[in-house]
Length: 85
Figure 1: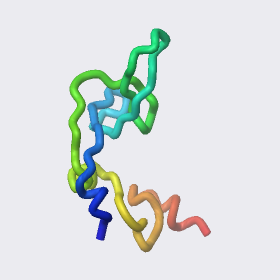
Figure 2 (figure 1 turned 60 degrees about the vertical axis):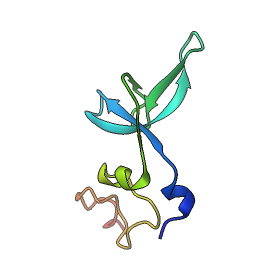
Figure 3 (figure 1 turned 90 degrees about the horizontal axis):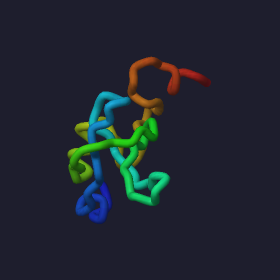
Figure 4 (figure 1 turned 135 degrees about the vertical axis):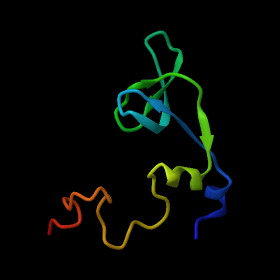
């Protein structure tokens, strides 16, 4: 069970052209000191409107909250993470 603070929080997502999907974003600043949003995966600047989503909605985009899966790995199916021992 998640903490209630997670359930009542919202997280900024936007479309990342470089990644080709909706991603979490973070705040950064351009050379002129203007606030910009960047992709948490590739650091590419994202344009367009932000979508503020709750934790359950993030999970539908492939993000994980709480305890990691018992079997480990990233769930990509490549067997590279959980199989290396």
